[in-house]
Amino acid sequence: MNTENINLPASFRVIGVGTGIEEVITKVKSLGLEGVSTEIEEYPYECIPNDEDKLAIIIFTDLEETANRIANTFHDAGVLTLGFSEDADPSCYDSVMLCDSRKDYPEIIKDVLHPIVTPGMISFDFNDLCTILRDSEFFTVKSTLANGVKEATEKLGAIFNELELKYVDYLSIHLYYNPNRSTPLAMSEMTSLKQLMSELPATVNVLWSVNHDENLHSDEIRLSTILAGKEIWRCQGI
Image 1 (cartoon, rainbow, N blue to C red):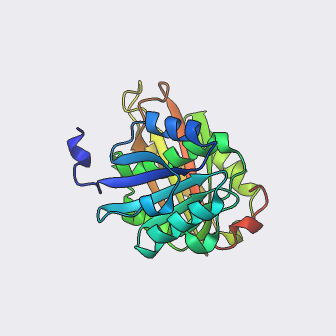
Image 2: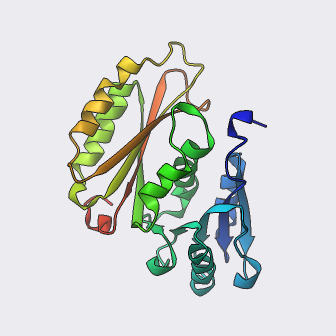
């Protein structure tokens, strides 16, 4: 057990409903994220929140009434509830993911959960995730990969240039690096990233973190961003 995570909530649940999501659930389980459980459910009365539950991610491709009913139960219990399906009823969730490609779900779920279950240089905890996603209605995730912070930041900046950020209420940026990289990550390398954040619209509330990811090669840097807001579906490029 990673003792640095021992005080994390016991249950961040990823719940698959219906058919066609087995592969997604299997891939999420293979990520081995601590404090995260995976399950597939068919009947809403068998899937109810526990006292320890803090977060529920509901994934489905069919049985939308069942999935939305399960989600509504968690949402009403005060559990941060996220929906992954174009048929998710926003009224049953805190936030619904805007993404049409099911094959991207596991990586997106990793981007959402990794910062809150893995210690890093600059932390981002469950309360921060709640700040961004609680009752936000919609969210999306974008990511870049490059050799170095500057190049990764430039790629993320190019993504931002394609979006109408005036429709974004909250935005978090997460930098990942391999702690075993050939040269230690220096805070001076954050200059380009801080500059990018300073150029965001004043109406956007920004949080950020710096995290470890041993799956990255040598000096690779990965940046992921979570964008949330009631009107982000208006953004171009989403």
